[in-house]
Length: 255
Image (cartoon, rainbow, N blue to C red):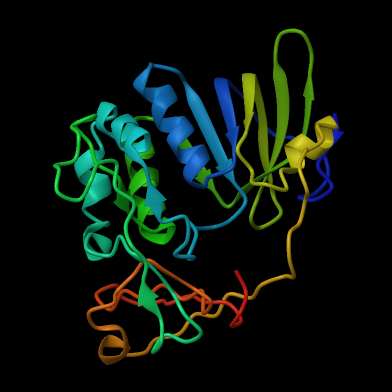
């Protein structure tokens, strides 16, 4: 049994369940994976150590292919509904302060005097993670996935036929053991599952100084009216007055 020291240690278990796929992680990737698996009739259990979906309004831009997948799952309208507050804020902006920031020109796949080419029945959209994850969670549960928030994967072992995983609930109590044909590591960039398997990452690693998210509520309509944007480089504060709080930002001058 491989203990995941980031989450806990192995436990003696009281119950065992067999499932085709176990998904570790209940963020956008894990929830979408569970939805696609259920769409194809696969029995799936998803575990997420957090008690609830993410409160952070990040990962806002979804491109055509993502919307095509949601369309195939019958969820395109459900995804676009929480995206309505950001529908008119495709621009990015740059400036030293919010008051000085100016909108940057939009990229277009065709000259400004020509219509967009119809390459897909779906268009990209902006929808923040804090409002999209609850939609995907409900959809996964409605599709028949066993979705367990507040449940941590604490250890796992594998052989030629299956993966055996130990689970612990948010109170620290034993939540049982799962036998799965496959384990999907959707537990984030610092994935404890990946680390436990000894799978390294490539690339430059951490870039820049640590940033700090600050959530606050303020009426900025007069400051950004006519210059609304999804992201402001320099202040790193999304400038969309129609979007309800929380707002998020990082220290001035960071990227």
